[in-house]
Image 1: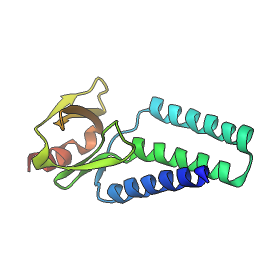
Image 2: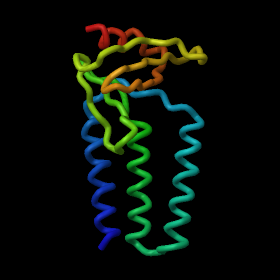
Image 3: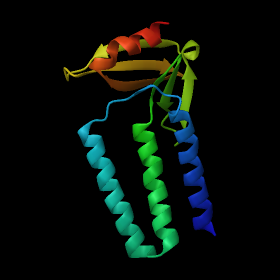
Image 4: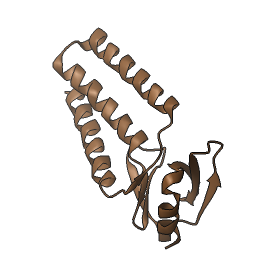
Length: 144
């Protein structure tokens, strides 16, 4: 019974994040190390499901946790007048209006193909990396 409750929690959190993602126009740039960590996480979780459960509910629970982590990593971005951020204290993403943001500024990344946006909201600072090819469109959204 506990596995089914966990499964429902993970799937509902993923669906919530997915619905917020649908409003986003520009997504954060994915770094290769993050993709590698996610693949490593998926392998470990699926191995644990095989080793300890080896049944349908175990594999479904493992896949739902992988999907939730995937949504946390790959769904943040910028929509029209809003920023989708990962708060860190919850697996749910938060869609923040630009009017709620106290401070937002850009920072050039070490990588010449990307730039960073630092957002100060809710007493924390969040950094998101975007492709430089979309810089003008993103800055237009931020400054509007």
